Length: 127
Image 1 (cartoon, rainbow, N blue to C red):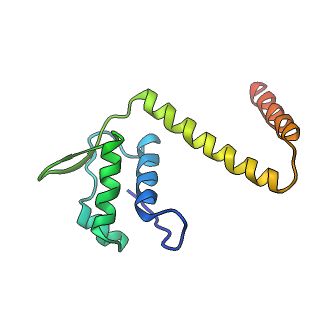
Image 2 (cartoon, rainbow, N blue to C red; image 1 turned 180 degrees about the vertical axis):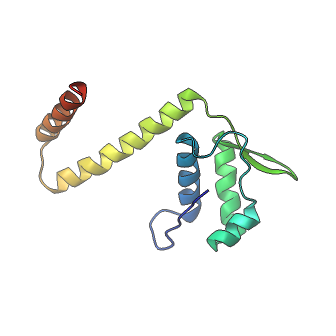
């Protein structure tokens, strides 16, 4: 499992961990029943506080991505198809929001954005 932390980024470290583990689960790079590194081991590897890793694991558990068994560790849970699709939709929306903000800043109108999206959809349908 690879996790890259940006210490000087705007996103809190625990959120970076959550996002990267979720991404690896959804892309099936981490399979169901895979044991995650212990909180202490991951904290040491990433050179961060164990409390930060614990917070990330707690959030992953609350969202249904992992299960922690006392004394045994944290394990990846099977991902249900609806949850996977919802996560992809959220990521897609976030991507669109970033692109739209950039387009607004550049003076591109909503109509021009609609034309671009329509052209991209048409290209995709013709493949």
